[in-house]
Each structure stands twice: as C-alpha cells, then as structure tokens.
Image 1 (cartoon, rainbow, N blue to C red):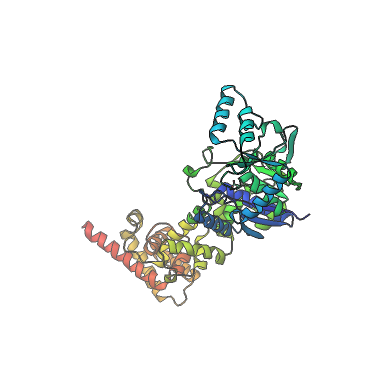
Image 2 (cartoon, protein in one colour):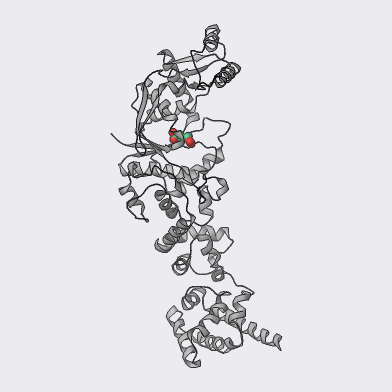
Length: 475
Ligand code: GLU
C-alpha cells in the first residue's frame, strides 16, 4: 500500500502557523513512508472562500518548500462527483430527503433544550416525521446521511490512541444542502476516498467529525483511512494562538526576516521530537519522523527559540542561499545591493550575529549607502580629541595600502597602536564609528575591507572633520 497523505485547507484566510504545521507533518509522513502528498483546496464554502486566500496558501506552501505530488485539487470543481455519490447513497437508501424547514428544526431544538435533552436532529421526532411524510416530490429538501442508530464508532488515533463515539450521539448529518451544495463532512470523505488517501493528519478540532466521516466511508464500502489528530498550538502567553499574538501568517515570518528552514525546524519541534535534538535538516526530519512521536498535549509558541533557530540557519546555511533570501529584504528596505559588496560576502561577515534577515539588512546599510551623520552616542564617546591622532595616522597608512585585505587592514591598526603606544580600543573604536557611523560591527578590519577603500578613506576624513568641528565649537 502506498501511503498517501493530504493537506486540505479551506481558503478563508492565509496559511497560518497551525495549518503550516499540519501540512508539514502530512508532508513529512508521506516522505518518510516513500509515499505521496496531495494538496486539496476545500473551497465549498463559497461565501468565505477567496482567491487571495488560495494564492496566500500556495505562496506559503511554496515558500516553506512543502511541495505536493498531486493537486491542487479544488472541491468546487468536483460538484458533479459529489452529486453522483449523493445519488448513489439515495438509491441505496443510505441517505434520504429531508423536508423539515428551518423553522420546524428550530422549534424542535427549542423543545429539546427545554426538556434538557440532547440537542440533535431526530428523524423520529413526530413533528419531523410528519413534515417528511406530508412533503411532495419537488418540495425544497436537503439530503441527510442515514447514520447508524446503534453501536459505536471506534478509531485508533495515531497520536491520541483509541477514540470511541456512540452512534446515539451522532445525528443524520446533511450531506447536500437545500441549495444543492454538498457539505464539508461529505466532500472530505468522497475526496479522501477518490484520491486514495491512506492517512488523514489534521487538527484536533476535527476529532468530532471523524466518527461521522467513518460512517460515511463504511456506507460507501470505502476503506477507512488512518487518522492522526494534532493538538493545538498556543501563543507565547499560553492563550490560544490567534492574530492578536502577532505574526501568525507564514508569509509574515518571511516579512519579519525568518528563513523557511528556521520556521520548518521550529514547526517540526512544536509537538514532535526525537530525543532532545533541536536542529534537524529536512533529510533528518524525513528519516526520523513518526506519527506516534507527536505530542498529545498543546505546544506553546516560543519566539525566542524561533529567533535562535533563525540565527543558526543564517550563520550555517550556504551564504549564497541566505543571500538569495536577503535580497528580498534589501529591496523591501530600499537598499540597493549593487551599491556595495556582494550579498554573499555580507552574509559571511554579518550573519554570525543576526537573528533575522530584517535586522541583517538594516544593520548593513552602511556598506551600501553613505551617511551624513554619526550616531550621536557613539560619536560622543569615540570621536573626540584623543582619536584625532590615531585616525589621522590610520588614514595615511590606509591610503598607502596596495593590498586591500582584512589582514593588511589589521596590520594597519597594529602599526598605529605600536607607533602611538596605545591599546587596540583607542584605535579600533574610533575607526569603527568613523567607517560604520555607529558603535557596533563585526571586527573592524573585516568590516573596512568589505566597505571598500574609497568609502573608508572618505569616512575617516569625515570623522576627522567632525572632531575638528567639535573642538572648534568647544572653544
Ligand atoms: N478544510 C478543513 C480545514 O481547513 C480540513 C479538513 C481535513 O483536514 O479533513 O479545517
């Protein structure tokens, strides 16, 4: 049997973290089993489904690298098939027409509530029976599935263990509405059956749907797939993950400067583990993944850990790859990447400390753009009278350099320290503020190397002028 999993989002919003994790687990399980992964867009809710949401889901999946072997299928393109199956069930007496009006159903519900009875559709309720008997062919009706009235439905959830429901609590659910549209619980079954889905991995909010769906599979004579229901994801503060908790759309993580590898690694650990290993390549995840190692309890989102993983991937993935993602942020922040060092060199130098690509781009602006002012606090501390001599000496040595490397620049700083008999800090810090405009950067020799000779010389001159001005103002 070839394992086949699917991700079946409803396009009523963007791809959020919970959905992305479900997609990832389904994708990983298919890969782990040498199987296939299907993408299906469940767009039967015509009022709430939108094309921008479909696009956002596809964009999110693509950005995360969760490729699909089949699909995307669209439920709205399969109505003929659903109708065919409804007709089959009707012909076999496994479904029936229900003529009870909304008003009547509301009346029965109110009665059940008043009597403290289980609120459900009861085909044997005298009023409903009477309505159905009185109806004429052609009257508006919906189609209901004839759910067994006795016995239980049991399934062995791969994450939560055996789950049992009594048929007495499941009513005859509508499979085709009065307006002719098929309903979610029915379409899912027809689709999963037609598409040969062997493992349904989805959120625990669907547990209550599963017994209903299993009864439909059985009525169709279809093989019932294996189910795995994943627990919820909670926000940093332990409350249900929602838009209020900030970035929840997958693409928002791209916007905030995360690499897809970091988010994927983060998501896989959010409810699944292998010993205490935190960092997994995609290959490792695929090889080690198993459904029964998924946690039964809710997982809490932890932004600190995501940042830590992102830093790990920024500094360890190939600079060419990181640079390809960084480019988007340069454009977004309006920094012209052609106006300075190659992004790969920048990543190699600046990646070590960066937690996000947004931060990396923002902190790299001085490599690509000149500035007209020094950071006030850094200048106050380091661009003062005592820095004049080291800066001037460094400038003349830098101007004389024939070889422009981090080593040769390191040699300049050492020579200045030796000649003036001062410590590294007395030379390095003023130079750093002079060439970067602020007090923080990687090692100043490598930073200067990447900024380039012409800019370094111009900026040291600017710093010397700044000091002269400052001294003049003080007099
Ligand atoms: N379309 C459903 C949802 O987005 C998922 C259905 C399923 O996975 O069975 O919640």
